Length: 164
Image (cartoon, rainbow, N blue to C red; front, side, top):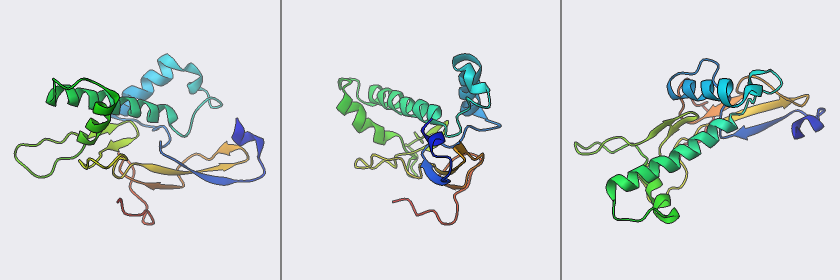
């Protein structure tokens, strides 16, 4: 691994996927059970374990595309499913404003809450979880060094910027 090639210099890095949950619940539990016990047995070993959750981030990205496609079919059955149509429908993944006729359509993903805010121009989820991780001696230090965003079991650190 590239991080092992420079063991002398410790450093921090940002990851959009937090470390795999040690006691996952709900969707995360189902995801990690399938990942660890069925798909990638090497993830069970200490050496093979991924601490940055890229598999979970990939899963959530696919979930966003599947959900946007489903929303497109629900609301606009006559619109052909094209990359552009699905891309625009991604903004429908959001928490509804207070209204008797609307329902919350955000996603509780493996890496945290996915909510695009309902703004057609927004292409990044609101309060997307970002983890600060540290590498020492070529190995990722267990545990988060910092955290910003919304995710079950985590609270944003005080230094996190307000979402815009």
